[in-house]
Amino acid sequence: LFAGRFLPGKLPGPVSSWTTKSGVIEKDEIWSRHVAIIGDVTIPESITVTVEAGTVLSFADYDLANTGTHPDQCEIIAHGMLDIRSTP
Image (tube, rainbow, N blue to C red; front, side, top):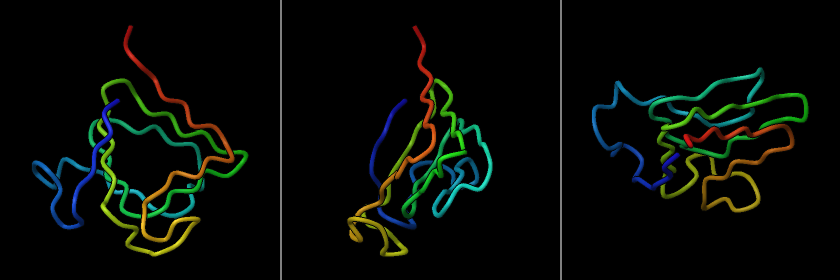
């Protein structure tokens, strides 16, 4: 897992290779490759988000939706399970 920051609209590398995330996650998900967090992400109690080994998570420099505990920052708010996988 690598986490970094970027300016919205300035994703590193080809934009087509990135998945963007924000808002409430409604079902179990597996994140892989390149994931750009562009606003607060909330994981409810009954939901699991699995981040595969080697995934790059990049956070926007500010929350595009201007929500959450810190409206000026992107946050992952995990009430459910955030399962971050690693390689040995």
